[in-house]
Amino acid sequence: MKKKLPTNCLKTTLLSMAIGFALSACTTDEDKNSANLAQAPQPLSADRTLAEPTTSHVFNRNVVWAVNVGGEQYQAIDGITYQADNLKLTSNKGSINTIKGSQDSELFKSYRSGDLSIKQPLENGRYELILKFAEPENIATGERVFDVYAQNKLVIDELDVKLARDGKHKSALVRSVHNVIVTDGQLNIELKASKGQALLNAIIVRKTTTTSVQASSSTTSVNLAKPIKSKHWQLVWSDEFNYQGKPDSTKWSYDIWPARKVNDEDQTYTDRLKNVEVKNGNLVITAYKEDYNNANYTSGRIHSQGKGDFLYGRAEVRAKLPAGQGTWSAIWMLPSNPFKYSTSCAQDDDWQGSSTCDAWPNSGEIDIMEHVGYDMQTIHGTVHNKAYYWANWEQRKASIEGENVEQAFHLYSIEWTPNDITVFFDDTPYFYYSNESTGWQAWPYDHPYHVILNLAIGGAWGRAGGPIDDSIFPVAMEIDYVRVFKATP
Image (tube, rainbow, N blue to C red; front, side, top):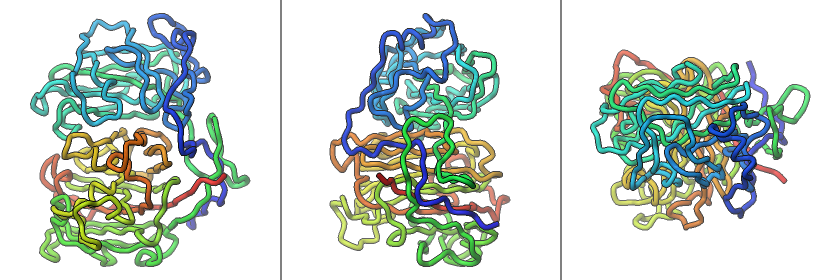
């Protein structure tokens, strides 16, 4: 079936595009008391959210409850005010002297440990939970493993905070859960350990709303659960994949690479139709177990550099992800001028995979979606830059628990302004990164980027959960559409 494009001007509740602002929030004593568990047994109303921060954006909008677990009241860089911990718990409180990997390091310095049972009166409805963790001890991976339940449903299975944070302790981990439904006037969150003690550093509870840019059949406006401020968006670039054969050459180019060029990946990328094909209304990138070009696996990687570059706006990609241990799929963005902030490269250097050219991470990277097959239902969003990347333990990232991502199409999207970057899964914002106004080292996101779609096999992350499972091949990632919007006055 042919897919219909949204009309050029659409309304939705999205980020403010004002270039300058102060990140702060205003809460009155009455607001704080009404949301405090120890002082307020009545359910929190989803229509009476915490006082809106002075800078309202899609990440902090509709937050009804936030707690700095084990700590004092805290004002976060995203504008959310966390209440002091007045939870009726007997679990131990702890502290961590140093935290890496977060723009809110102070928030992660306090925690509670032990089996936790948190009960919060809350109006019936659908909610999203953002849970924050940091491993305080330099223990071996596997020494602290626990499950998280919401409304008596397992929502995070066998979480090992250190393993999930790339084997690093004292590094911030943010994990979101969506589609939590309260029907009895009370939110119930439980953490139960199978090894060691569970721990928790902070909680955000947010009322579910709709943010995606979608046109109805009879109007150009978007139906929103609770619009706070609408914005017009104009479609400026897209591929609906309503054709057959190779990807549209006016929109996409191939990367044709050998194995091991980047990330120690095991596949070679080709431009063959069997690896990258448009059919049945979708772009299909398929990986095979085969000997080709001195590699044991083949796959595809395409990009829109020079053909779909954009600076600020919203990008949406509807995709179904591959299944199986050893897959590493990605929907992401790189700078169209990779040498913008490089200091050690010659112009036109083959910079990707280079050990001498610092175009990466200096000029930046934005990951709309990354997924590894050994952790099947976890979706990751990340930014990389000179100040904050994996080599210095400071990588800024978050993840969300998906649902049937290998069986159904889901929407992966980003909103990018001069002030911040927000990453979404199915309309749920789960990763927020703010422009600290400290220079290009932390914000190289002030020049055009382009979209990349690829399916890697193995590599450092793809093999982190164990060897590649050769029984899964051929395996594919399918893309329904790619759409880029810009904000209009």
